[in-house]
Amino acid sequence: MNGTGAATAPILSVDGLVVRYGAAIALEDVSLEVGRGEMVALIGANGAGKTTLLNTLSGILTPSAGTIRCAGRLAHVPEGRELFFDLCVDDNLRLGAWKASSRDPARIYELFPKLRDLSRRKAGYLSGGEQQMVAIGRALMAGPDVLAIDELSQGLAPIVVQEIGRYLVRLNAETGLSVLLVEQNARLALELCARAYVLETGRVATHGPSALLRDEPAVRSAYLGGHVTT
Ligand SMILES: Nc1ncnc2c1ncn2[C@@H]1O[C@H](COP(=O)(O)OP(=O)(O)OP(=O)(O)O)[C@@H](O)[C@H]1O
Ligand SMILES: [Mg+2]
Image: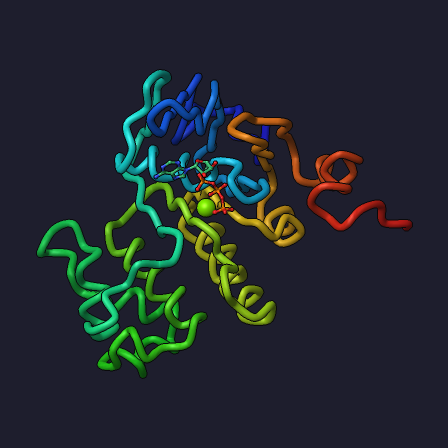
């Protein structure tokens, strides 16, 4: 099979995940898979639990039940990017490397040529789109097998999001990097990713190939601006 991740063992698999904040349940029995080389979207309204899921995958939060198996390295592009604003682009990128021998950001500058010219500029003086490229670049410095991105489009103009989206698709095609993309802009997420999960108040409401989800009335009315007459 192609594009579903079903043919080989998934690179990331989450089973029956439960995450609580004190007494409040933020994720309830969440299961999902990302296949090797697959781009998977996670969409859902504010407060659905998307950030909670990514923070749990990267070990920031501890689940109270369930399992997470990752057959490789996962890198996380956090919500709000969390760059070091007083450090230059180059230093922000170098901080993403997990060992000294892989601290050369040259390959990140190949992917995002714009960043090469900005390499000495403080991250706090970059545009939102440039900051997002640094955040993605920093995560890539860890040499991940899976890239988990929280809110790619947050605060960015649509044209900038399209540009960064194209970089991701190219990276996925050229290197086989798997991507789990958390995105409130469902239209964009379904465009970029072959498959998607819809999270509603801490549960997976539906999942499947993006092309099918796009036509699901519930997904259309909740996330794609209602019924679209074709
Ligand atoms: N530190 C926390 N303490 C208590 N509750 C929290 C905490 N962080 C998140 N929550 C709650 O957990 C639920 C899921 O939040 P989460 O941030 O994961 O949602 P989200 O899908 O990422 O939303 P958004 O689209 O706004 O980023 C929400 O009800 C939120 O209020
Ligand atoms: Mg969030």
